[in-house]
Length: 91
Image 1 (cartoon, rainbow, N blue to C red):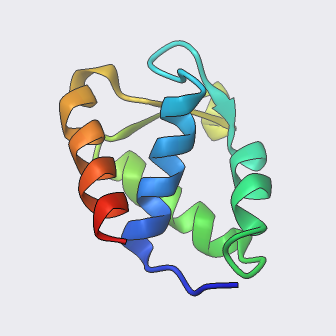
Image 2: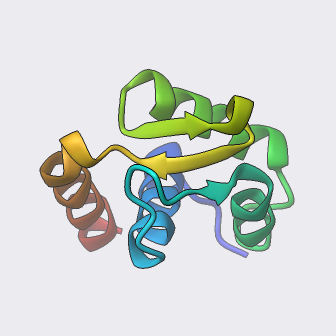
Image 3: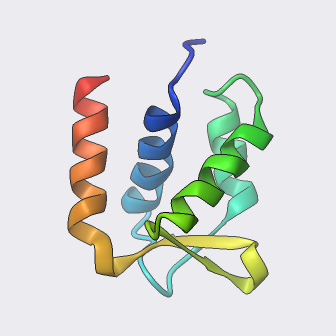
């Protein structure tokens, strides 16, 4: 299991939402995201939750249903796709 940087995990979170088409009103439960990623990130749900919180504060993600679900911010679609490409190509 490889050790991933925070930037790589953030890109992975956004990339998974992008592949599922989760923009704006189409959202995904945060717990589901954590379960998918915990297989790659040394079983660390707290770290993933913290990074989701950072992405929300930065405006990349939108919270729904009292913070239990999350989607990509359609207003930042260009920035999100650029970020994912930049980090994943580098990695």
